[in-house]
Length: 175
Image 1 (cartoon, helix red, strand yellow):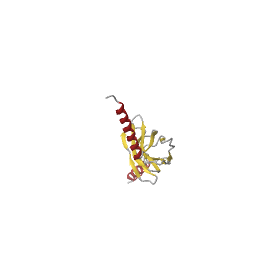
Image 2: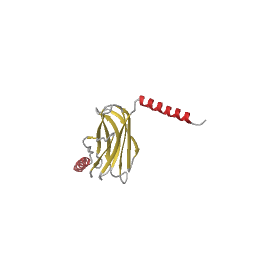
Image 3: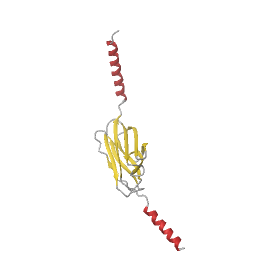
Image 4: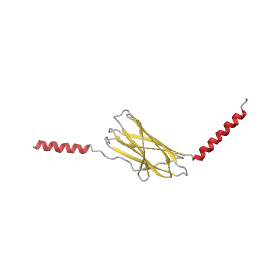
């Protein structure tokens, strides 16, 4: 009876040592240079199995809607060390998920991308989620680019201009 009590107490204590902790950093504002920015985070040693969901906020301020393309990656010697990126998503400032990223590579090299079209004026954030897979340190880095979406009239003017160039070239060609 005493042995069973000791074993039960020991197993409860060992479970507490391996409990997952949230090691997310506070939300960070991206410093957009023009329409692009770099972002990332690093984590200290002795955090195996801990999870993170880091947020990187930005705003769309132009008159035109913008398309977003973002990439995030981490690299380590093997899949058994460092961290594992488990998600990249785009959210509105109010917290509504707008786009979910795609894993391009996993293992020693993790690569995720996300894209979204026609983001209007407002606040948004990217969220990078993952898990520390070992007691070694780990880091990830990424880039985001916003590209204004041309208005339909711009496409019409471009096509008209190309048509005029083609017409002029045809008139000048020898018969």
